[in-house]
Length: 299
Image 1 (cartoon, one colour):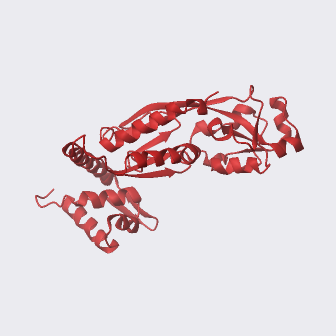
Image 2: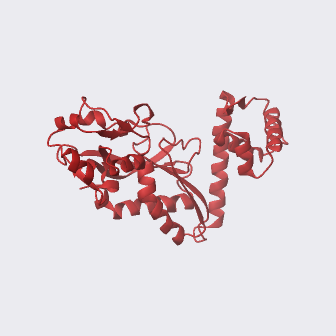
Image 3: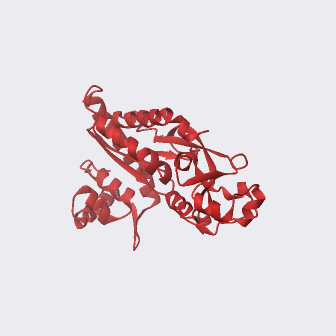
């Protein structure tokens, strides 16, 4: 690396690595995409390395790019920590925090909670990403994420938010028309709703085999809120989390003793970010909100 290396190039590189697209990265940085393209080429020349493979679908990291990503993220973390330390713990908490969460938990529980956090900490800019997939904190797709399982690899810190329970629910109209199942074997005679099998992104969401190997959903979606709306519309019976369905006036629980599944939510933060003031504030807030609402998640 030459002595006149442009350290600002780290920001350009990280933006492309995280978005995978030159135009999106340029928009995020507030510069023209042709300017960004020239800067990336200059960075590669300075390093004498090809950092990206350019394809019609976007930019993907080469093996050299992956190594440079790890170094760039360390530099970014050190800079963020230094800024946090210099600003002092007593100063106003400010900055952007992106939080990834499963769609059901994120939209029904976390979204209104973050309104309260934003009101208490007006210097924070909060971004809630609710997508039916896992988030890569290593690639900084989010600053923290609510996960269905404790991560087994990576420089990540995780703590359990709560255990939560799921049951089998149907709409009042559906149950009047089709009757209530009395045993698990009765489910063969009912319409079952659930996830699209090949789009299940975590094994914790594969509920149907725990009910019976003899049934299969006739109507499926990758979205939990969509499954709930299908259930409300009379489409059939669906496994839904208690925090989403139990107190909904349009739904009734069936087979409560036979179908009682348990899962967990974990709050995961990259180890290098966990001591930043804004990350710590968000982590503590989410943890306390879930603790206070404990009865919502379990019987």
